[in-house]
Image 1 (cartoon, rainbow, N blue to C red):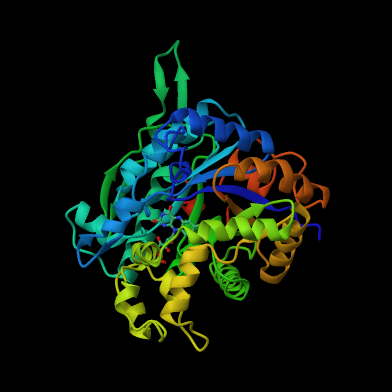
Image 2: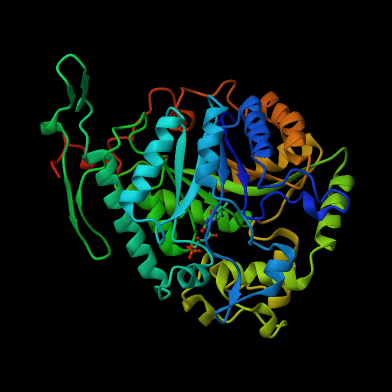
Length: 454
Ligand SMILES: Cc1cc2nc3c(=O)[nH]c(=O)nc-3n(C[C@H](O)[C@H](O)[C@H](O)COP(=O)(O)O)c2cc1C
């Protein structure tokens, strides 16, 4: 196999977990900038394409109330603002891509586009936006004093959000609009700076994104959320997607995204499909399994149910444990990926779903074993699913060092990784040297002043 894999490092909602180890509660934790600086530098030295920070304003709630286990065990609960963090990490790295999530339900396009454009400047073109409609929407909506918007309508709003954001990024400034002529006192050419006028269903705007174009103009567009509405959004706009499931389901999701991308006039390869997975490397398979099991043993069924409630708004412990999740659950207004995943003819029982969440959360089967075994498993996964790479979540403390020090060299030895990151920008890392801007086949290119005046 000659395909070079894209590798991102995943920093999930559980943030740094070392406080869970007795005696290590006071290790530097996720509120400590030094920890993140250290991690970003390690990622850069290892040569991964990017570091990704998940984000959400939501946390587990049921029937409008916070779930006490969420607070007690920090189940998708405490976090810091990753956007602020990325600005700091941009200053101590030079090549590493930096990606985070902003839900289209939270920031309106003028605020979001200014923020990401600023980050793209500060990082010299290394930033990506993970577009989501948001996990734990019930909590997030309450927090912002809004009604919970129906699931598919959230995706309609997301599509309009992305369109308007693309208008701001691609349509406001022509490439040579910024003049910066000190002698004549000219900052920019007014004829080449265009006002955006948008009168849509969810957003209205008239005006200009005042921050001049950054190296990538539009940050690299990621997407996560593999419900059917999520896949349709990804196929239209995303340049990379995060997916997590068993290999058969992944293969089907990836085939669907590629088919839809072609229907949208984009190439089948326009979207990098990245499998999110947990990795645990040890000296033997048995040791990796034992270490993984030791973590599972610390997770109660209440913890697993709280995690499930975070993603779906469903209280599994209130259902019949020996029957599958009812099909009607997929009509609710919370996140659907982790409901749809467990329906259909081979649907597991609620008890099995709980066990799956206890063992693997949303990430699917972990990659466990020696570096060679993990590389075998990774290669097989790529072949079975047609994916383009991985979003790697090393388990617990020390996991990053082991992944960088042992698994990356093995993947490299097999020719599965690039020797050097391509280009200076994140889009080039993913799509090759020279691919700094959105390609012409992307809908965003249609908003460029040269293509269509807005
Ligand atoms: C690897 C991975 C990372 C994700 N990161 C986020 C995130 O940072 N924030 C978020 O709200 N949702 C994230 N999601 C998506 C949620 O799980 C959820 O599916 C989505 O926000 C709701 O959309 P849905 O209804 O399509 O499931 C992620 C999913 C995966 C697989």
